[in-house]
Length: 449
Image (cartoon, rainbow, N blue to C red; front, side, top):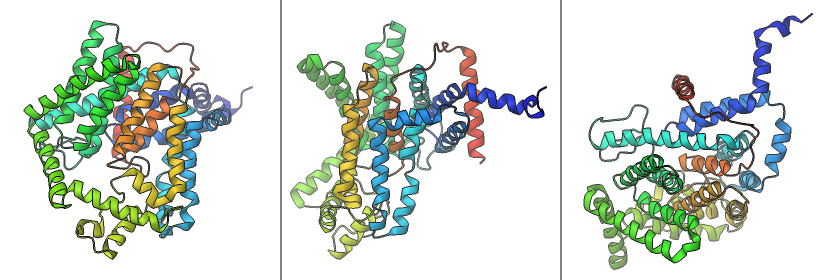
């Protein structure tokens, strides 16, 4: 005779969640990818739901063991660990300790995704991200053509002059460049003409959007990302692809300079800044301030080269040094941002040579990782090169901003090599409906929580 507990629907739900745990988790990761280029709160809600699902995961310890054997996952965890280890040596214990809690996602995201993602879901996950970018891009064009004046739940600065709906324009330029290489890869590899046409058209609109935004970093990253992808895909034709890629990029930038007033304006500012630096030694510009910041950062590194000044305190340390030496760039005397505009100097100032070695270890392990799927390996290395280039002007591994999460999520996805599902059904209208309803539900739960 069944017990009362066994006859309750709760018991049935428990059994269902245990049996279908991995499938449910993968559906949630599809939704995570959709929200990734847009809203923070739904992403956080989905990560929370993935954590809850761990309670019903029968093979949790086995999966965790496999994850911890992965060298790239180990590298992410070690980087977080060295930051935690260096907290007691920080010049500001409270600030550094709080930071360690903030960057827990360096451990959480790789582990959650690695133990759950099934390779059969990878196309859906990438597709959901591209769909999210399509929505973001439509809003960007709506701003550009004055169809809307602002984006609900978007960034406060989003406008026709700065059409980045959900991100600061620097980050938006980077995510557009990453989306461009995903679309270009699919365009070149698609076997059906309709697929080539759709991916190709989207690639063109994304490329145009890069140069209609205010982020100069995106202008540079776009060229690096596209050329890296082409070289990885056609490395057996090295000289030919360099020539073709260079001609393509020259054409793109020529068109951008001709038809995009914002691109002309931003590049004009950059050229003028460089001329002032070279001819007059004038560092009173964004580029000049970065050079001055770099010089002061080097002096700070000399003070504590091995272990740095403490996790997350590069900006205040540089501000203090700028005041001590009375730097003529008064902007540096009291930096308003938490992080400085260079990942590598940030790491050296904060956690020294010791921490930098652990950062470099992440890059080495990603390069060395043996991914048999050529598509995933190509995306993996392209993303790595993209963020390494981005690190010259910003941080991507010492904060939990959008680029950090983009890097963690997609790098982890490219580590997946196996599938636990016998067969994943093709997407039908009802699947899209389920995903749409789930996304709407998560959105409203998130914004009202």
